[in-house]
Picture: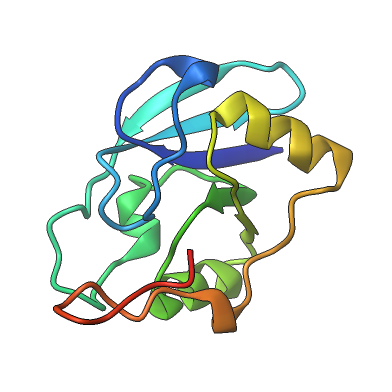
Length: 126
């Protein structure tokens, strides 16, 4: 299984999970069977609010899951339609969130938990 974690900087498994899927500078993709990881630049970072193209952001990489602290409903729907599981990450590292996924303790994201946007006065549930 391959899991993508949005990140600000590439520190491998010790990378901090970035709070927002669409504006993350890069993704750390972890292969669960081998434990290897690779860094992939977010190819859709510069987009208008609500216009994130989640699959384009991942650069065409085939993944099975994403773990993120915040995501818009359009991006979540796109990932779900592609059969990609989306976990609601805790604040911490890729390694910490990876262990929670392996333990079955990291919950899936729901549409009620998605970001509404980041214009003046709007807040997110994370």
